[in-house]
Amino acid sequence: MDPMKKFLILLLLLVICKPGHTQIIPDQSTLKARSPETFKAMFRTTRGNFTIEVTREWSPDGADRLYQLLMTGFYNENALFRVQSGYVVQFGIGNKKDVNYFWDKRPVPDEPVVAGNLKWTISYARDGMSSRTTQLFINLKDNYKLDTVNYNGLRGFPPVGRIISGYETVEALYAGYGFEPANHQDSVMIYGNAYLKKKFPELDYIIEASLIGE
Image (cartoon, rainbow, N blue to C red):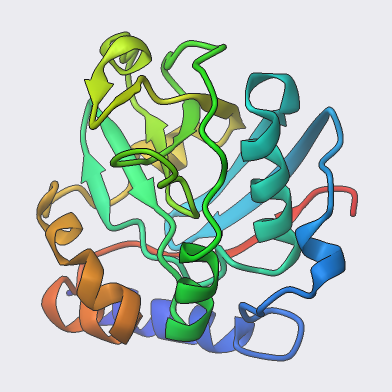
């Protein structure tokens, strides 16, 4: 890794490791929070910023969970661990074991596909029934097959929102590892970013993700 990039990543991650910016386990009131019909969030990354807009109508339970995750700083310090150019970018494993397992035990109810997986839309990753938790992926092209594919008993991946600015940031994310880091998700759940930085030092990170206007 370029020494200057490594220094900047470490510096930025240190900046957000202060009260109010780290991931926290939510209280019951937060778990019951309902999202607005639409809301926006800013993602600051090691490559720049991008902004998303979430549409609750597309995936009501998914939107509520994303709102809750953003309220509690879950996506702060997240690695963008799967970057496949021209296909998808995936993220959503936290840097704290206890926080990861808290959300992992509280999956989002399954929902049908209402909106299509068009370029720049964002959907939850899932690998079977009741498996949507915290991981999201950004479509880097029109992935029509993800609307209808049958995967472990479920049909398609329901989008929850879309990127509305910062496209160039997403396209600049380091893609040299492709899918490979996604094969190590169990280790990342336990050991966090330290594991990824050792094995995949060129990965980019979300520095901070926060609701706009909150």
